[in-house]
Image (tube, rainbow over all chains, first blue to last red; front, top):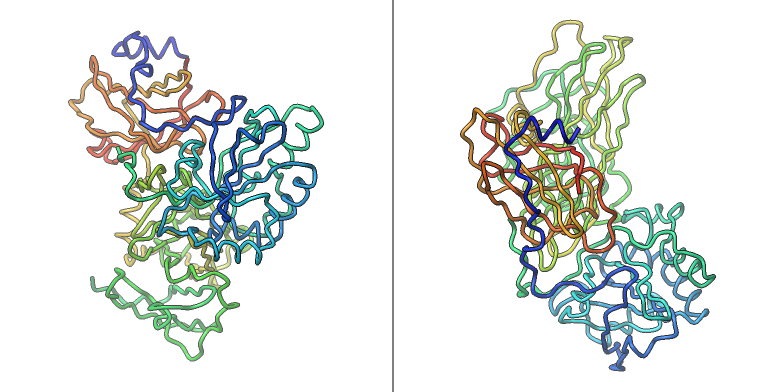
Length: 218
Length: 321
């Protein structure tokens, strides 16, 4: 099929594709599946620093979050996220929520409000990390809330993407959904291969600062 | 735009919960005879509502406040229908200023609107036809969608056994995610009642311009153009050869894939012209998307495609390494 197409359209040349020469965005996300998770240190809501490097030897879950996003609300109002957090932190998994909402954007709250909301939701995450300038969000290429990453005890990313396989803001859709994070952790902890290492994340957009140089629309 | 009285055909809408300026225009919808008056509205091109003796009781109060951000209505191109004669309807979404809903592929975040038809026995609705989307650039992210308004088209085919004495109700449950700085889910039930006629179906001119605009925005087939796609480790190049007998120039072209996870949506797509062929360079999705074997989606050219009278063409081609 390709050959007949080439004969019919002699305008196409045989030159090497230009992709090697393309311009790179200045801050390109560094997170890659099966590669070391990019290092970072972020303070939690109480001001305590969490350094990813210090968590080697444990499974780490990164959960990009925004407590007012309808997709995040779906998971917390149903108790689904808290159940996951409780179950896996009991097994020694470190569960870190990361909020990259910029000042003035949805999801950015004062420490006192965060603590109130965490208590109200009965969040069972290990910590709630504050990434107001979006550095770590951009480092990981976090696009949505939620956006999930699972890092194994060797510090390698073994899952990145959606929380589950049903992109919806509707609580009813949680029932039949396959949770990618629990599937990943359950397999990896047993030494079994992770079936789904990556999926398209869904949710609200991460609320990065508007003054950042955004990609121009082409 | 003055509009005629509508006679037999009727448009009715109600939604979960009522708020804001649209509350005042919520129309009562009786089960029996109808009168339709059409009025111009300040902020929306047309509004149609029913005048009748009783008010529709609103459905359960809104659990989400999305209803004053998007107004959903059901429009049809005909006033009456005939057995086995397909006709076009459209779910019209009108967004409040500053708000958008998503395209089939929402882009980096969001959710495409969904339409669940509730049709009488024997009726079949065709797949939704999506007008080409706009890009909404956010910090670090790009969303594909529509602001102002969009008409999602579907062709409905009635059964041969259609009885002419009873009017038919075409209904749909529509859900969407409306976003500006924040996102708010919304839903509405929309419906349309149409008479059945054995005579030639009458066109309904009320929505003619809305349907026309939507049709012009549907992706056309790229007839006459040579389209090829090459995939490398980190990029996709779409090659476009214009029809040989045409002197057509492309200045800005954007590729919108049908599904997320194929390309990086935020980086600009570079268009170059070399030896009579246009090369559109696109960055592949960074996080582990498998190498695509086919490239499927919509190409939008701000200058159109020469003889093809549309801004958008659809492509579905094999990707070569």
